[in-house]
Image: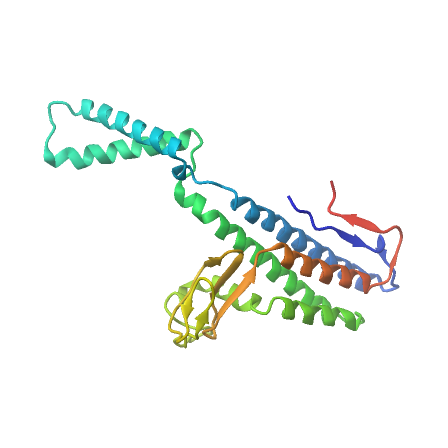
Length: 262
């Protein structure tokens, strides 16, 4: 597990306006919350990289094959006296269902679930970054906030240029999957060229949804371009610099604080 730490320069914001201070404090705590949410999602994403599917293990495969045969023979025995070509498919179906349920009850994980995990955690990372960006945008527009905060908001856009576009696609897959852009009356997408280690479409015309290219989670965005967000230690490091810079741009009093908690 990788933990990205945050040091807050003090315990309390050092300003006279209590209402303003309380509002800013809540925004900063929300930034911190979504920062650690992204960190958690990243760790879960990384953990999926070491999962070896049970069907890829020869011993497990042989054991499953033997157990399937045993269950199928038991089902055939139950149907003794009424075996016919017409009910053979039903016997095979019943045996397969029993085998699956037995395997799941013993802790087995469906293959589809194993394959979905990295995508689920990649989207969780994406959503955490998106929420962080939204709170940072609100904070940067608050009265009497240092201009440095706006510069960190701009840095967020520079570090994660496709964040909003990819998030919008995930939020509106019902439109993108039909080749439509954004808005109340979405128009057909003009699919732009894509060239990377996973896709080679120099002439465009390829719609990509819910894709993982290594650690890079991507989709076609509303403007027809392909966008990606890197679910990585590097991304967390960039986010860490932004939140620590934001915290340091305020005046504090009291002992400095270290997060996350134990």
